[in-house]
Length: 244
Length: 244
DNA sequence: CGCGTCCTTGACACCAGTCAAGCGTTGTGG
DNA sequence: CCACAACGCTTGACTGGTGTCAAGGACGCG
Image (cartoon, rainbow over all chains, first blue to last red):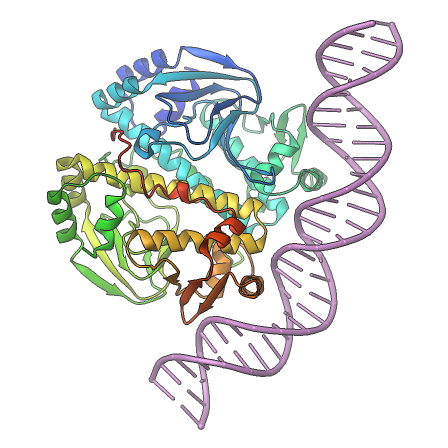
């Protein structure tokens, strides 16, 4: 099964085969969106839930001076906005970074789905709680780590997340981001992002070319970045707990 | 009514008087915890939900070199960990910063509460989604704003959040944090936090003394910090939406 | 009164931002 | 097929914001 959406949610709950079928059916209705297109803008209250099925997208906020902070990367299988309904409106923008396949699911379908399957409901909440956990780790990354470890840490995260949906090998992973986008996500300038990558290259930790990231020694890279993937919660479905 | 917990949740849902009574009853069983005490440690899976009723606490993570990043401030009325159950374990620490009154609610009581009152369930989810929204804004703050605006922005946020639970006036707000803690939360050194505060003082924007923050011109401060409180979702209960 | 904690200040080094220019690749149109 | 534009990557020079180290001062508490 190569549906990234189902693969992702399977990390968050023990899905029955009926659940998987429903999710696959729903996520089949993709629409192709070209790169650099806003999917949702600040202040909107979309009635559909969006879902990235291929390509890279991001959440971001703009400041008055035009600078932009990327708040999260949305990889294949990621929700854009399950649960906006509870807050009433969205406080940031979501845009594609590359060409993407996107699914739009009417709110009521999601409601039906979660009402009829506790596992799916659990997985949806799991997904947003993991998003929150990632945000916490990003904050640590930005606040405490020097530039080289910061970049290395992000590389490790993306690799693991891509692996979780079957889109990365043990030693490599697609990396379609420009250095400007990388900088915007890590709070550093384009120029500094470039120099930092060179640095990692010179140390023999990674190769980055042709939109592909290669890891020469992933264990060493993780040690260097002080990376512990526990915050991604990718391997403990067994631990129960129920959605309220 | 001066219960910060009820006041806070009331921002997240239209609570009936029955709901309020139940919440008040539950949050009455406080326990006093002295400053600098860990409430929850990384990796734990507590069976009770904790709640701060007075004082300041924080979420934080430690790095190998001993540096610490404060990920969130927990003010009176804030949950420590509703919904840990879904993730199975917690990925960060929570500690008191000042002396605090804390409530520990057994997991099953929360379950009962949310099962019997959709409004309370909605408010609980609203609360964690707002936490996530705050994290996003913190990330923007750390990534894009210079030190002076960063500090000013945090001041604005704390002021509004304290006002929301009835603990701040229009022009002042309790501020028991040390400059070291402030630095840890904003990703800057103690020394630089100090210099930045001096800077704000010299501009006549704030007075900070005796654990009390005074605002001379809150509108000007917000303009300076580019602060827009919408991300706190404190004033739009009316916009419906249902918990899944 | 003495100790600890927190705040304050100065000197100095360095990480990282900005400005600016050049290079390589890709794609497009004449 | 080549010229050109657009975009992304790379590099250098210079500046400035922040971190670190160190020392002293203010305040509160026992």
